[in-house]
Amino acid sequence: MGCLLSTPEVAGGARRRPRNIGEVVVFVPGLRIPRPLDFAQPLGDGLSKSLVERLSALRTRIEVMAGQEAPMTTKPRRTATQHGGSTLTDLQQALEDYLPVLLGLVENGNWLKHNLRFCWINQEDDVEETTMSDSWYEVLSVLHLMAVLLLSQANLLLLPNKFTSGYQSTALEDCKRASIDIFLKAAGYLDFAVQKVLPQLPLELRNDLPLDLSEGVLKALCLQALGQGVEIQLGMAIDSIKATLAVKRRLACEMVKYWHQAEEYIKDLPLANGWGEKQKLFIQWKRIEAKAIAYYLHGLILEEGNTSAGIAAAALQAAEEYLKESKMACDSFHVTLPSSRNPPPWGASKYLAERIPKDISSKTINWDSQKHEMIKQVAPALPDFVLSLKPDEYQLPSTDPSWNDLQVQNVVPTK
Image 1 (spheres, rainbow, N blue to C red):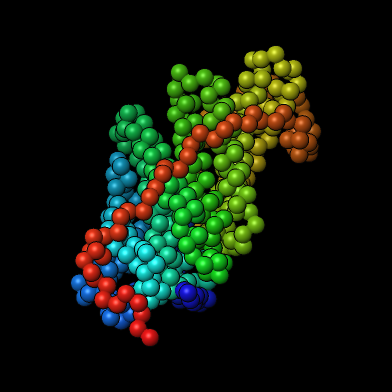
Image 2: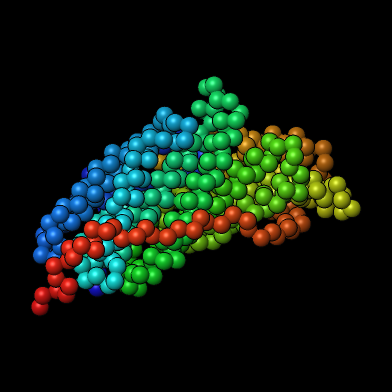
């Protein structure tokens, strides 16, 4: 059975607390960083020297690169290639190289999976670092880091400041499409972690996982990835002359559902420090913003139909109220440490900021400004659509062939 060791946060600890992370399109939690681990002593009698050295070299590479990458992901300005390329992709590759070798410690009930004490620095938990003697905890930590790196790559890809420096519209569209693929891949890692890896841990260890790896946070992060994928789809639909109002409304309503579900998973978790509180506020902001867009598009469709003018006006008035609320939620998110900035509006956000104030003022009923809650209560219900975006299907890679070469010297522990 794996054991747990948690280290409370202390002044001058290893956890890094950036004060500013610059422009944010995609919320990216702080990177969990693995602490150094000596494979030789606990595994020396059970595995060949070459396999022990390989495990050690692969993990040490991740320790060094993650330690270097963590401050880079919080730089206010960072250069990215067209495909979001940077050392992010190198670290992602290092994790993918490590995973097949790591899986040899957990396959077929290998007794070695409890011999190592894996330690990672947390970001959203009050406890600074968590150590567990179960290799499934290491697998879970690796998958989480792989997903977070993809979200960071998507954020770099979508930062609009680079679109003003000679980028053609086709390049911009390529970035948007690439980001959707990245979101689905990240969601696939997180969904697999929840469905297949968490159940491998004993219940007592699952209860002692840091908040960063709790089921609620993993599910919320997965739904965030899907919600942001739909947001990109909606922005592309808004820019397309071929997309109908009904298509745009459907995407907006789906976006509301993704963000609402994400908020349900995370709202009661004790995420009180910077990264955790910021994640909560980001999801809240995006849910409110999605409602503003959805009610605006719904109101326009009601206006075109046979619905009474009062019902259509109520939907549009609700859109205006949610827009005001979303601006306050946006400000709350950005001022929460680590502080951040809203990039120049584009896509669905730009559409929201420009169209709603202009279109609604002449169409809505004059309500008392103090009755904003009543306005939302009398608004018609939004249509309920089946969610279209699903996480990519992910499977763990095959165990590295080096484990097939009779590397295990002791099949059972010596008594």
